[in-house]
Image (cartoon, rainbow, N blue to C red; front, side):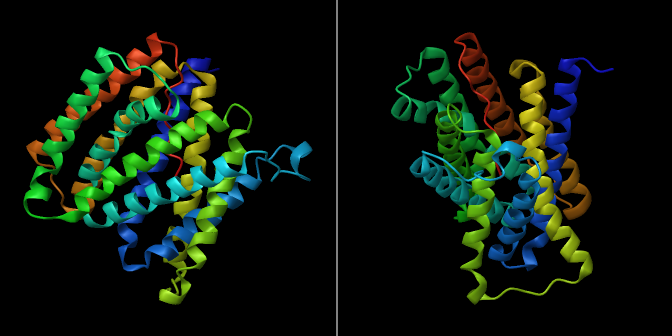
Length: 293
């Protein structure tokens, strides 16, 4: 029988694996229109969340008094999702994952404006270190005018506001409703891309595209279960295994070898995120940032 902390570790590990596989399939799906990939992410994620609605909420699962905040959460989440999908299709896997770790840096800054939090010297130092890491990773892209390096940063900005919105929504809204509304928003938004052309997938591709939504939905659930069963401070560092998986998958499938600059920048970004995380644990603040993709 596993202890609560062991269960938390297991759920976090499974979540990281699921997100990594989802990223892998998104990168593979570059020959399909982006809107069509969004549909599969949203629709099959939506089906998944319907399975976990409590029985006493089946008749009014959609009810909320905070429609405006849900709209903002979904809008910024959609921007973040589009950005990370574009980045995955056009940049090395390890590079995208490395920059995506910078989300807590932007969340720290946003918390000043949206949550009226005070940020001390240590967290400002961490923000500085994190930005240095981002510059080291993206400098080759900016110097050669590769605009795709901006998309992982847009993802971090969008995800950072999503984290703030979820903090606010979680005070009154169940987690499943927040995630269900996001999947519904993704699905609806994808329908507007149909006129730009969708491609009929064969059976194999249909299964793989469907897995984007299934893995995305179950990864978020496993992440929530991890935080439920274990202390956040114990399981959060496991999220950085995603970089290891990205390096392995990128090399084996696409022959991508991360540069020393990418690895150095990734280390700085991870150190920055861990400093922010530890400081906020000391200050007893909720700092877990779910990808919510």
